[in-house]
Amino acid sequence: MPAEQRETLKHCCSSAYESEFARMLLGNSFHPGGLDLTRRLGILLNLRPGLRILDVASGKGESAIFLAKEFGCDVIGIDFGPQNVADATERAAAASVSHLATFREGDAEHMEFPDGVFDRVICECAFCTFPDKPAAAREFRRVLRPDGRIGISDLTRRGSVPAELSGLLSWIACIADARLISEFIADFESASFEVTTVEAHDNCLLQMARDVQSKLFGLEVLVGLKQLDLPGVNMTQAKQFARSAMRAIQQGVLGYSVIVADRHFGQKGS
Image 1 (tube, rainbow, N blue to C red):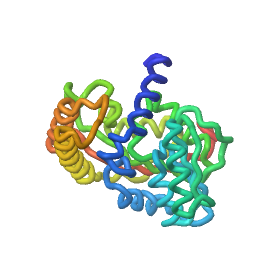
Image 2 (cartoon, one colour):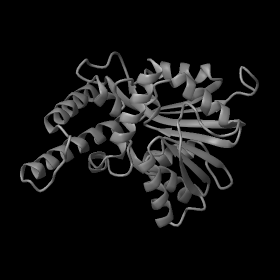
Image 3 (cartoon, rainbow, N blue to C red):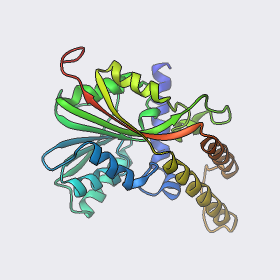
Image 4 (tube, rainbow, N blue to C red):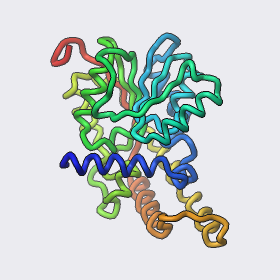
């Protein structure tokens, strides 16, 4: 993918995630499983006070704030969208965890951190949206200390994604470049990680799809009654897309997984 196209895609996805429509559909936790799955990821990563955590694509800060409160660790969240960063910072202050959870703008493929400053890297439902996944995996490794560990949760696929689930909307919904588990493992192994845990959480994706369909129906009713205005939102297209995604999930084409990997010592990475 040409560099200009990659940058355009990042900006489009960022704008969509910052939108009021996204908040109405997904709330503040933009990934299947919500904070229950975030807690599971924290347990697998053995989070605890004193550890420094990087939350990549931190959105409005829901997970970072939760991890800071639940595990007592220091969390820095980066997000491509400035409005998300501002919202997350405000929410951390409201939750009285600004001393533990802070946020800044950042690009997963080009992070402005020194080498080896984090104990853990977390990335929820975002890795598959990064245009240059090998670059992101290398950056994850670079910013980790020698005994560091990464934990992601993300959309997976078995076979090919249906043709109707293509285009920009699919990138925003994390579907267009959903990966085979073997591809995730290859991405991380090529960056000198060793994958230690893979857990399937397909039911979380199915529940989220059901929730989105229900909310779309409710929003459509409000728009029809002129009690809600959603400029730029094509409800017919959104509903068709949701139906196609639901069908792919029920057929087992799309799933959701947690993956944990340890940073290798030495170089092919030092």
